Image (cartoon, rainbow, N blue to C red; front, top):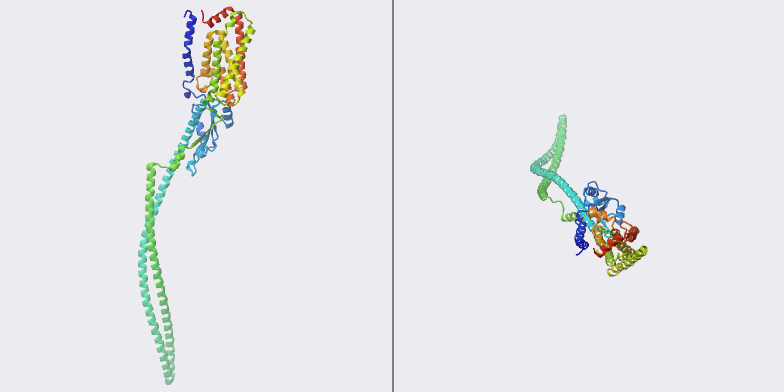
Length: 556
């Protein structure tokens, strides 16, 4: 350690672990608590019902929630945003969500079918985080449905309790009426017994009357017979006495007419008393039948009263149980409400495994490390020890960079595609991007080494650490702080990672593949021209050339 330059270099190199740790950990410090800038689309197609609108309630709640950057759009906009990498996912609330949300009150309950759409090709960890967001949304919907379910059940219980109280009062009134009916029937039964007794007495009286009428009829018959005998004797006497006998005959004639009338009346009386006797017998029979029917009716009314009393007792027990336990649904209904929402998760691209998902970042880092290794081994500043032709030296340097970029890009393509067997949708895009990125990395690092010597190598490692942390290859860049998000827009590895994702998953994320190539080629052209400028400065300014030479050799 004879020179300050060597001491400074060692101190600077010793800071690399610290720089790597603080830079990388700073980018991944707490990503799950910094998701407010991650865009997530909500597609609400729910038409709602008179009692509930699940979609509208969810939208209103999410507007007050800053977990993510919610985007409330239609389905087509959400699809395009997910395909372009402008959002990390979207969830669709179907038009019949509210209708199915309350279907548990019907005979055939249905789950609310919701779909969560993700793009793991854009950012695998971002897709996992979005999947958790989807479950969070489902939980909010479940709470909404459960709250409405409980409200509906309480309303129904209140209604049932009110109706059951009315029914209980009606049953009590019916029971009281049955008791009154039973009492009335008892009185009617007693009265019918008295009626039967009176009818029996009437029947006995009619029988006596009938016997008297028959005796009267027999007496009048004998009277007529006696009158006929007396008439014959009076006619003989009238012939013997002359005119006085004629008066006797007239008197006898009047007596005969009276006897005939008496006999006719007696016959009518006998016939009437006979009919009265028959009617009284029919009346007595009907009253007996009535008495028997009233007895049966009394027995039935008593059974009815007993049944109503039993219903009243059981109904009261049911009400007491409802009030005590607040039971409102069966076990089957409970299972339906326990999982009211079914979430179907869809990925717009298929991911083979974790390796395929992280391949864009790993390949980009591998090629950058290969570029650093090349510039560590290759003596970039040795050519300035002798007189050179600037343009010839620059062209030979660029040609060497191109050859090395071709070698490492070919090697990495073979390893990834054939040895690791990672599925790649577009092989030519993958190889082209690998070559352009390798050439850009070698040129950038070469420019740093040409400008600063060995300190440029140190800066290239710092550049690798920064790009590893701020290129969005692991967690979504939106989960990092503002510094990393600003760096993300200018780092070449950010475009490279997006390009690899496009080549592997055949999706255009953030930028078209052609745009990415143009951006990288523009940076490459700038780096090449910058090296040409450095060659010119070193050729024209010997003191600058001497300084870079000393830095390269770590000499005083």
